[in-house]
Amino acid sequence: MIEASFKKNAERGAAASGAYQYDTGQRMRMHGLPSPEELAEGDDFLSGSMVTMQVHYALKGDSQTQTRLALWDEGESCWTAAIPDEYLQTAENVYAYVYVSYGLDEEGNGRTKTMYELVFRPLSRPAPNNVATSEQWEAWAVKREETELVMNAALAAQENAENAEQHALASALAASQAAQDTQAATENAREAMLRMEDVQTRWNHMGVRTIPLAAGSEALAQISGSVLTLGLPCGADGAKGETGSTGPADLAFSMAEGILTITPKE
Image 1 (cartoon, rainbow, N blue to C red):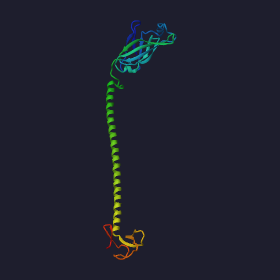
Image 2 (image 1 turned 180 degrees about the vertical axis):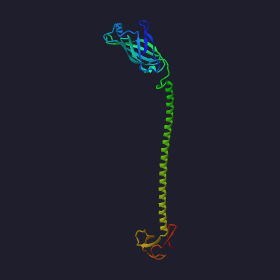
Image 3 (image 1 turned 135 degrees about the horizontal axis):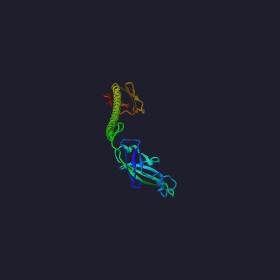
Image 4 (image 1 turned 45 degrees about the vertical axis):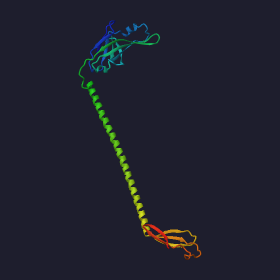
């Protein structure tokens, strides 16, 4: 229990004592403050509603407070309010503001007022072994930052490795496809070469014969086995001339290096 004493009609502030750092579940007992009835009697505009009191706690620099309801102890003639544990974890000044609510006035409007304030400072002491000190929290924060840096570096390295693996896989697939295309092109070239060699062989062993066709017929050329047959239509019969009788031209055929040459005989 933390005790705070106010002097009636003398001052609005008080000092409290009995708080140690790392205490928990503590309450503050405030002596010398008006009772609920005295507060109500001192307000000319109060209509019906009972007066209530709160204690607002804060550290220096806080923009907001934590609120605890204060209860009137008739036997001790004092107000008692709980103290949040977090305000006892450091040996710093704790500011407590006594906030009184006067209920509703005759127009139905609520009215509140900060009536008193006090300051207490928990006495510094070594931390219990089950409580982390501020130095330990700071060291933990540093270790956590270092761990996060290592984890981020590891994640980046893993991502780079995965990207490199995907790139290598894509390159391997491209190389495999290129090899397949090269093999297919080689097979196609080999088949074309074999076909050309077959044609060349057939032409090298090709025999040529001619047959006369009736005048006015269409010339023909056909291959049967290894024999090329050429059908040549005869010319129309005509009068004898100085060069002899009429008839088809006498032709000579020769094959050399796959080339067929047709020449008229003189």
